Length: 217
Figure 1: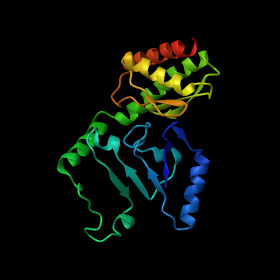
Figure 2: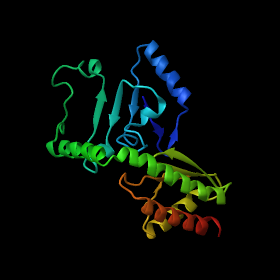
Figure 3: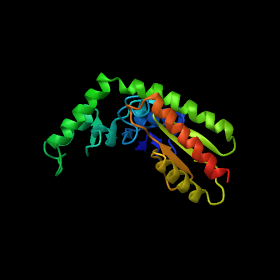
Figure 4: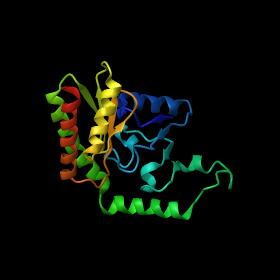
């Protein structure tokens, strides 16, 4: 079992590595499972993150974006695996909650009707391009990772980097932009799939402004 990408840094694995892992699993009758909690439902510019690797896992674990803000999670898998437990053996206290299931169906409809997966791909390319423009101005300060509408700015380790990043996130929040400080040397960006290019530009300006304030004191 592996995450589609390492969460704190939006770091994807080398495609060759995942293909080899898939081959080893098939040759040894090992189930290959992907954790799609963060990467599923259009987030990376594909319906599911595993599609970036050109392989098909046996099971995928989903949640978060699956419910569009409503608590919902699930496991998707091949029929021959999902049919193994006897009836009633895969239940839990909150299974098949009607409100959560309705939210999940609404999410699927919105993704399809508004073509949000493709929108995430195109807007993601736009967002990463603008972030790279900031990097060009600070070539030795940080690196960028991610795909689609998920990105991580990983700063080079330096003295008091944790305090600086906490300050960076705080300043961005005061300017109206919510970033996530991971607790390590990175901050994450994950805008909604419905975001517009103008909103992306507004966010990029806030990030650049506050990087300049925090790291050019």
